[in-house]
Length: 227
View 1 (cartoon, rainbow, N blue to C red):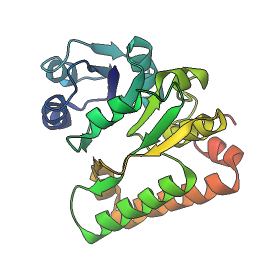
View 2: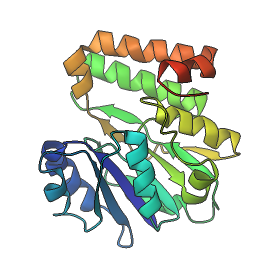
View 3: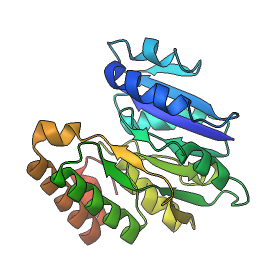
View 4: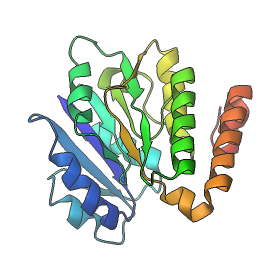
């Protein structure tokens, strides 16, 4: 069974687009869990149009919201999606199939695609894909076998950012089997790049990646966490 988990903070506008596209292609036995974290808009109301499993919390943390959703989940594998992500039609089915015959060891992600088609957006998506494949890493759109997720104690709630990269590191150290789901893709919403500027935001990602490769301890501290 597949459990799809979405954390959301005031995401009513984007959920109205991403959720109908998602539920149209969920396997019959999959469950969809939406965790509304400190929402003051219609996020919960929109989510309830597509699933009964809508929870409201006040954690103020994507990591905590994802962990909360995972604690409610019944599936053998978890697919974590950002609220503004649209994935290719086959991703839920492909991830659900990974739970069969792989035990509790699988984790990974799928390639990102630019939502704008702009050359900078395509370049950034390609660079993130290279980084993830080279380091067996992943972003907020990822999948983890339920047993492996619990074995590594889920996302690190002390991290304000980078909790997804950190989870991949711990899954790898736990003996997880990394899967690059090349048969599917996630459409990367570039609103943060548009808000902060493509070059500026990309540079912050590059610097973060370099710091992570040099020293995971310093990387964790820079993001507000404990190594």
